Length: 344
Image (cartoon, rainbow, N blue to C red; front, side, top):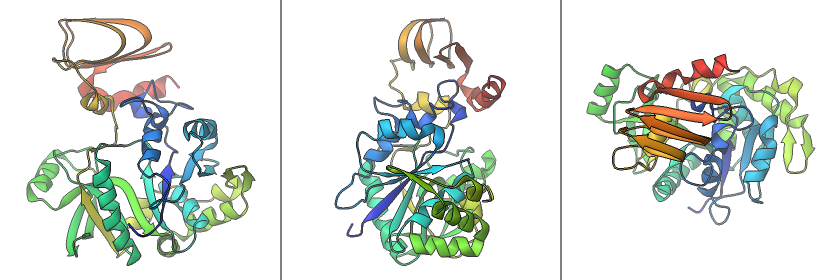
């Protein structure tokens, strides 16, 4: 890559699907769920400052500023602090309002896993060429199963060797539709990773979601600086409608491209996903901490400082965090939010 790209790292999520470990100040992105480094540290490491990447813009809430600074490990970055959650369109608008017109912005969630970083960098190089031609680029994950928990992107006409024009975005589908898309080919999972020229996204936002961009722009202009952090103005930012970047811009613009990539991606959106990526024993148990297992297989156990024993159990999760203990079949992992809400 010859162009300098500025990473924009979205750190705003609460990650309640991984309750009880992920909550409040200890959101999912700051936990070590795969290996020793937190997901946020892994995200930072994918775009090292140097010949290709500028220091990142990190978007986070006020309650996460201290954790972000601690986990940046003295790396140069600019923090932009959101006074309240307003979804991804407004968060990205804050970064766009801060950036120089011709800067290429690479927007990444902070809580995903990418196993094959060289493949990601190769896709970024393709995306950068398209972004220079004023395409709004999204990265599509080559599907390997008929997942119903992700949105999909339908690719249209090819754009040279670099990607495809986006035909349409598809909401999380029923299983039959997911199976049909997998069989047909040409569809990608929507990973929520984007690359674009700052001025191009600014113009797109002014066309498709003017109220969001103007509120973010005013919030930046009226913001208060504290060292490496810019605190966006709360009165102005609160005026921004709360929409996803997909809904606010990507689904409406007529010049959106997708770069498909197989890079060992996971959004770690459930305890089942954590189990899938964890180091397991010969019979599928992934145990962290002081755990005793007898006649048990296919389980995820995170003991959290307690002594946990399982006898005759299969395919369940046990997650201990302080006084909170979650026990459930792994296949029911999408119901965790019910417990998280009840224990707020």
